[in-house]
Every structure is written in structure tokens, then in C-alpha cells.
Length: 386
Image 1 (cartoon, helix red, strand yellow):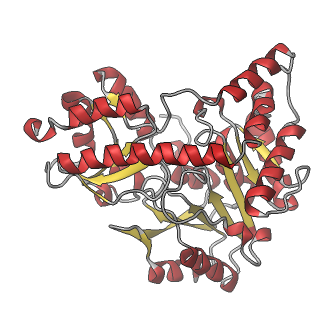
Image 2: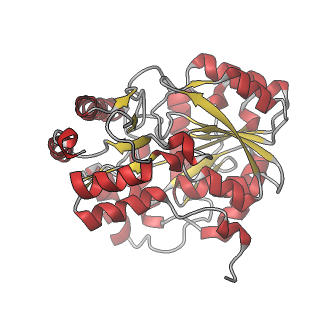
Image 3: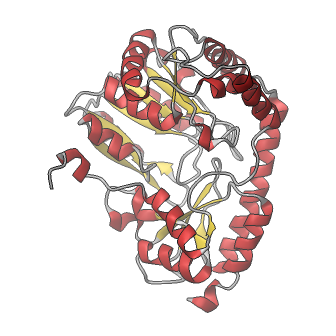
């Protein structure tokens, strides 16, 4: 078939495929990480006002000035980071596009990029599209700690970059201060040029603290911080993300972003600036609500026979089902959707070697309590259905 070789080296998103499987079988969708509850009213009102105010044409390619200023102010308020809104911030169509733009702008073909695994499924295709070579370093179950020996060996290869995702998808791990210290030390020791961070779940932390590596001594000029609105403000469909980087890197990221998407939706950028100004009370309630959802689902999963480590952050739990079935993860996930009525994601989609995720599936708990309670009822019948 006359298609490019790069497109033959990765599959479609397994996560979004499982959403279609859920729809096909009428299953409760605990596969894809989108909330089924409303986003904050002030942001919806601001979006409507922007549309009615005729903010309907292209924004500045790298982001509306008001939103870039709001992002810079938020990072100063939360992390004491000095961010220049005119030079350091690029607003993108979601954190997904930000990550792709960063790979294309900063990584040359053949250069190595260290990636912890399990990993969010986009990182592999991003590396392939950029022609980069991923070097995988395992997080060790059951607590998903960093394998210091393997990380040290990988960094000694002097890769161009390392990707750091904390809080972590799919495991829910929150990297500790000691682990960030280790990564920072190895970056400086081996002159790794870039730390590319995915911090989309930065405000959903139940244990420990979120530690932005850009605040470590000597790391600000080596770090590209990626985040967005999808998870924090429950608006995954708005597709608003951003990258914060030193000026020279931002200039390159902006050029790639310009020719990928031109710019993010103008009226939604106006509304996003409102969300960036929310006070700590909003984020505290967000975390507490998610912690209650986590506890409800994790308790039901253990009762049903899954093995797991309760996530420290984000809104996913990676579970083992070996005590329930000898199926592979893809077969088990499809059976769970069709026969039990709960959709999840096969663990192999988070590993380079599918065998490493064969006994795992990932559940998302970013749903209304009523939705989770329905899923709990269905999972209660799991042992009888196996």
C-alpha cells in the first residue's frame, strides 16, 4: 500500500478504540480519560460571552495575549516560576499537540529520548514522527518507583532529551522529590539538553506533592513544561494546551505549531484565562472529589479480584487481572466490555513490548459518582461471569 513508512510503525490510539468498543456494547466507558460531568460555569459563561462578543477569528498564532499572561501569572503564583508571557509561552491545540510540536522542533532524526514505561501511548508515535529513538526505562511495580540503575545507564548514553510525566499516566505515580533530584542530577551530569515534562495532571495529587523540575537549579533553561486545561477544568473537548520553554526553544516550537494547526480556538482561549485565575479552593475541591472517586472504584476493583496500587495522582488506576483470567489484556478488555459492561484499556498499549502489559488493564475514574456506582454494580458480578 502506498503510505509512508512512519505511518506503518504505529497503530491508532488503543484508548480511543476502546471508547468505540464501549459504544458498540453499551458499556460504561472507564477507558478514555474524559469526565462525564460539567466543567466550571464561569468558564462556560466566558466562552459564550467571547463568542457573542465576536471573538471568532484567528488569535495570535502562539496564543492570545490574555491567556499567555494568565498562564505566566499562574506559574508564578503556584511555583514561583518567572515566565515571560511574550517569549516563553506557546498555546496549542491540547497538550497532545504541544508534545508533538516539541518533539518536531527540538529532536533531530536518530537522536535518543529517554521515556519511562509504562508510558502514555502518544509518546512512541511522537518519537517516530520526529525520527527519534526512544530509550525505555522501567518504573518498578508495585509502587512504580524509578529504576535508578537503568535510568543511570540510559542517561549515560547522553540522550538529547528525557520525557517526564508526573503525575503519571497510566500508573498514577507522583514522582518524589528524591526522584526529581536524581533526574536533575543525571541531566546536568550528562549534559542532556532537554527535559520535556507532561504535567497535565498537576493539580490532581492525593499523596506527596507535584514537583515541577523546571524549578530545580540549572534546569529552567533545559526544561519544556507542557500542560493544559483538559483535566484540571474538565474540558477535554476544548483542546487547549501549552508549552513553556526558554525563548530560543519557544521560537522553534511556535514555528512547528504554526504549520500544524495555526492556532487554538480564539473564544475558548478567552475563557481559559478565566480558569487560570481560579484560587486554591477550586483545586482543593477538585483533588478531594477525585480522591473520593478513586477510593470508590479501587475498593470495588480489589473486591472484584483485581490487584492494584492506589494511584497517588491523576485519575487512572493500572490493575492486574491475573487472578481472574488467563486471557491476554486485549481479549480480557474486550470481554469485560461485552460481557460485564465496563470498558477499560489493555495494558499492552502502555509498553514497548506487549508482553509486559499482558496481565494489566487501566481504569479511568474521571466520572460522576452515579456512573462509577453503576460500574461497581457490574464489577460485583465479575467473578461469576469469568
